[in-house]
Image 1 (spheres, one colour):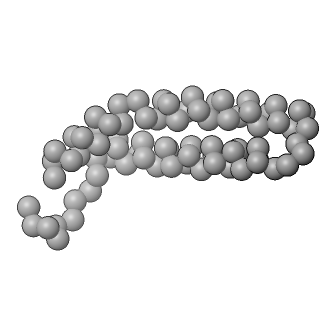
Image 2: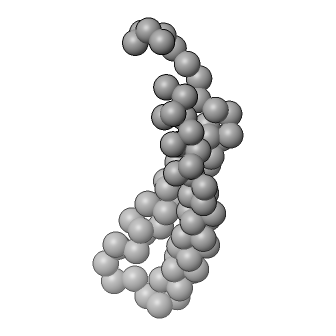
Length: 76
């Protein structure tokens, strides 16, 4: 393969990476909200709940991701 030859990522990997990026942005947003000083318990509780859900989504989106990435590397 020529070094300047363009290839497309596996569609499954592309979709998973997009979903992972979206969830990472959501997680960062929630963490930023928690960094605000003087939050009340009523403000913190829903943020932590959303963060817990986001962590589960991140875990789900990364299951098998390493294998898909390795498969792509092997194709190169």
